[in-house]
Length: 267
Image (tube, rainbow, N blue to C red; front, side, top):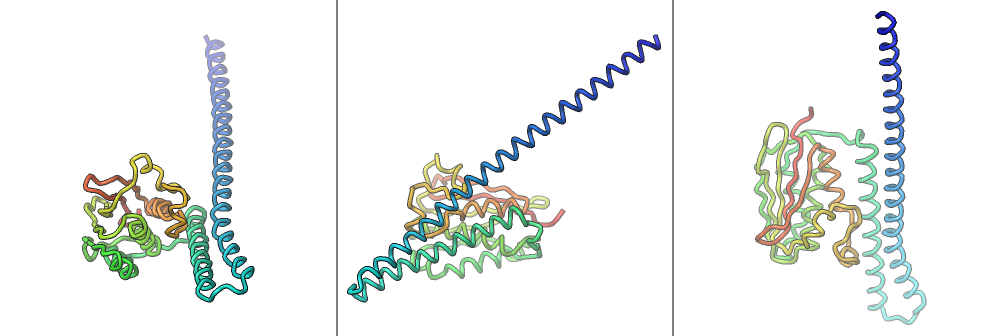
């Protein structure tokens, strides 16, 4: 009987060793697969960045070469090409800034400081920044946040979330639309927020992709109106940094509606 127990213990030990070895192999295989996926994503990102940087640089070069090649060009036409080149430098600068922000959120998030902020004040600052463009388009702002909607958050990132959503409306939603922002629920540690406009919305098959980096509903659309193509991707990353989630729908009444959550306090 004692011999039988010894044999059973040996078999159990061997089984545990075998299971451990199998788990290690599976873990290593999973790790290698994750590394391969990460490398693939980095290569894809690098390719996308290269393409996006090349576009404004090529445009700037083309405008300047045209000016140099035509010394007798009228001052009015020369000014037009200079303005076009300048607008492309703005787009290039925005692209570089947005890429740096994404990199910081993903690789150096521990360097992003959190503090007590009032979401109502932050939103008002964003609407003030765009006041002239909002007025030109005849849009209506509805900031239904309550004063004293306090979060422990990174002020710059929260400002960017609201700013990018508002700017998305100004670029794509059309004129004479309503822009609505409110916190519709505060449950436990989270503030649940919605932002919507009454514009044209987007095709349903594009909704799940609009948070992807450099994704465009129509090729060249973002290039025509400016922008880096990273605005909503930054929104997603900034919301995630604050422990929340974000989703988007087309409103039945027309326009896009975003729902996102932000943690109100640290754990």
